Image (cartoon, rainbow, N blue to C red; front, side, top):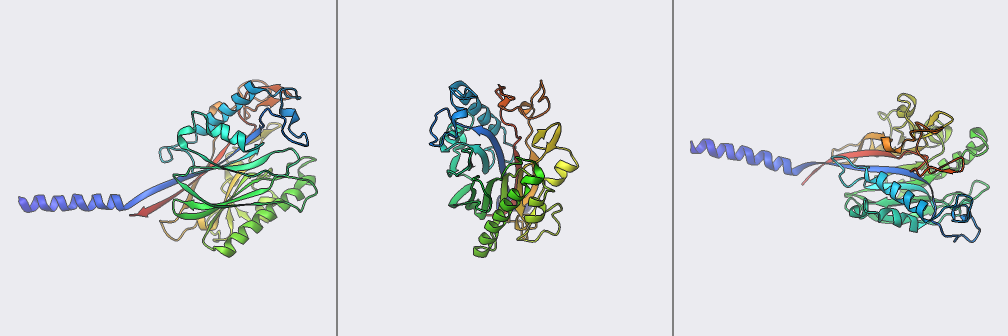
Length: 345
């Protein structure tokens, strides 16, 4: 009897030790276009922000500003799951005026417990908007930040922000983008986004020359769909993950748009998926279970983010439409990818 009890105890101990030494981890990485989040202060020397002031065309006052800040914080507070209870490790953002507006969002009661940290850089953009990154320090340790100017086009646009750090011990680089718009039409403006894609690819290649093992993520409002030239040809972001090499790119959004019919913004009743998160092959086809590996991509089109009436019904509930204030969130839905791995301790 004693031998039987001893054997049973040993079996239980062995399985308990195994459970403790092999543990699954999940990390979310998101992107969200904040649709012209300007403060109410006319503080741009070139007057680029006058539209978003109390006396400007949009009569952008404190009430509207803080309603939008709260809306964005509430939306982000829903970027959670059973495996990511404190939300994504990283959240790229675009269409922000300055660091101050990012601080106002992360300090809202819904997000304050997450202790999100901010990376921001002032770009020369003609409209006065920038890109930025939020990160949760419990998951991500910042190493360095570089900002890259797109000089191959004739007008001033957003710099590309490259943030390098450790995602729970594994080095990754995130290149946050907001590529030039389709103003003037998709075909006429395409060379501008091709130039932006060439810059992103050049940044990635530079990262790999220094550290061939670093995982690279290109995210942002690319103002192009996965099948457009900038993404499919210049980045070479492939539709299927199977044969993507370590220093090539996989784009998980092709089928979501073209098969499922799900996008992040609606234009004249048709969906586009501009808000993409594209991964290098060494985050897709990984040699070991202990490496971060892509397993899921989602458009975070929560029901409360939809317009439910008027001409925009069924589209993202934006802040303004045809000059009328709607009190919404953004004209884009957020997106998120999930990585997972197993660690042994």
